[in-house]
Image (cartoon, rainbow, N blue to C red; front, side, top):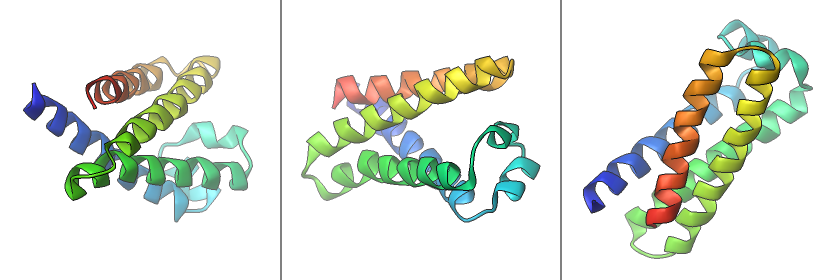
Length: 118
């Protein structure tokens, strides 16, 4: 089971650091053009805050395992990702983007798995 947790933890952390970085370093228009139609509903500052939270949460999921200490930070990162994904699912359902909501539900389940196993 430990190997499964490591794999899910690594994937979850990397996905959130990478996708958060894309959103953080792109303008609102670039985020929309790259498939983030949800960004139409939000101010550029909110998009940057969400992206920053994704980057930090992704790092919190990965770094404690690499350093071998601070495992409570993994739980905090997984909880933050779960909160972000809950909000994201809500936004996508409200916009009737059900396929995106399902993908985000998978990320939510991954975060809950990492949180409960850490």
